[in-house]
Amino acid sequence: EVSFTLPVASEVTVRVLDVTGKPVWNGVTNEQMSAGTQTVRMDLTNLASGTYVYELVAVDANGKATTISKKLTLEKQ
Image 1 (cartoon, rainbow, N blue to C red):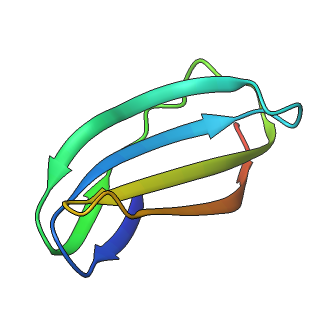
Image 2 (spheres, rainbow, N blue to C red):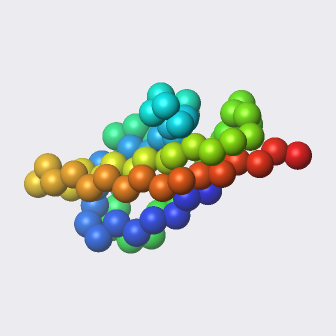
């Protein structure tokens, strides 16, 4: 799960990229979300253990885009 807070209602995209920058999970695409704390559940069962980057893009009603990228380490048993 990834939790984040939106200051204003926004159109949100969340995806996971491999180390080469290739998208390997596109779970949320252009979904309208309200202001406040949001949580996105990521089903990464098809990915191998390793290091990935998740990217969140939020575009507000004025067209201003904010992008946040963070490292994600996936460890499977």
